[in-house]
Length: 287
Image (cartoon, rainbow, N blue to C red; front, side, top):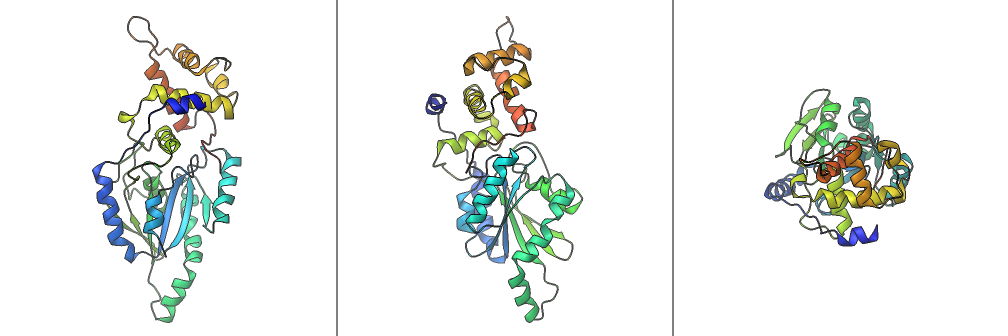
């Protein structure tokens, strides 16, 4: 696995609209009481944007480990403990389930109780909490918002970059939520961050070398989730990663003209199976 990791090129993706989005977030942060950050529960470290920590200084914070239904439950528990020890309120959830999304209202109210009490003393009895929801591309912010609101308030998609600009959304009388586009940061300090974000679909697939990425992922599965490849594709795991990818191509009929295996298609199939949860509940990093 170390060899595969060392051989891989660093992955970075920071298109121009993200620079604009960060600028808009900086302009609006003075209006905000609490910053709600959506992380992907499969990569709760890699999906945490350092730009947000700087942006949210002196603001109340809530961290949501979204897509927890796709992550290893045991590992997710460790991540919850990890962030709680750092003094950050954290909730693991599947934002597609409306009751999970709406369950954050009392949590937001609790976190912001000092602010609400200050407003009450000033006679501002019905001023809603102003929240900003942030996260990396494809973290599920729009799905979360729609589940919370019970209607299609935000565009959704299974690719990064669907939300392009900020928009305010009213949730009853309690919360005004500022939706923001998914943003990354200009350069990943750790190469593994780019790899993990590429695997979960937070980086534009068009810039990713999927064959190389799939070999890394196969080795990761062999070392951390032994048996998953055999169960899903009915092939032996004792082979090296390249041979396993050939096996997946053979089993799933990924063939080019002339009969050669289509390894790029097999690699995409494997990565899609991770993203959809078809491989089972997998976490890509531990605290």
